[in-house]
Image 1 (cartoon, rainbow, N blue to C red):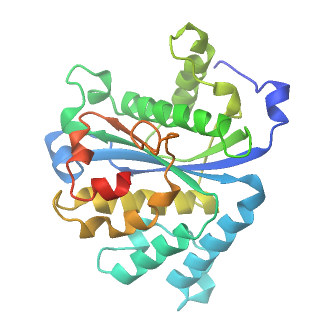
Image 2: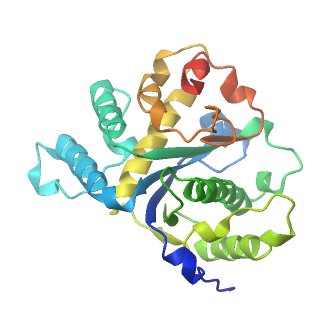
Length: 274
């Protein structure tokens, strides 16, 4: 395994805490595509000095979910388990709580399975698929850290652990990508991400909140493309999306693997795009 270190001068930058989780499954079988036509990874970015807001928000949502069972107040919350479709009120409360987090930023990478290149290796290997999606997300995190309002920061990235995934292999792949960055025509500012990366459990408050952001996205993408209501919670947090200087969303807060029309032809896209 290649070991890379963060250059000292970048380590002195103010810190940016980044939490990553995923939604959908990574399978490309007919059954997997029918059940989950997309896979997405979501990053929640928070300035280190506002980490208390992460704890406050996650603790408040756990109290909301486990209020009737105070002995479970420290049990992690999960979108799938605790914010089911029948709990429409709870979903909106979660979105409103996330929307109140000042200076939070969100980035999504979304893969539409049916329009991913037929020859792409990621259609044949779940590990390759996960690694490539993670790479695209990290590239955007690196630029967000470099261009952070008020000055560059060093992103400390914590990714949620994934069942049946060898994260050592992922780390090796990302180390290789970073090590060969100088050979590409479009250099990525990898030094603005603390290396090496870590994968952690859902005990981490920030990963619980990233999971909720990912779940909100899932609900919007799982609805009928002509139904704007399915994205009502996604639109509550649209102000937190990373955007270009001119407000552009594609390629910045949202990266799509496959056809852009999977997103851009939905009734709520103009509102999300803003």
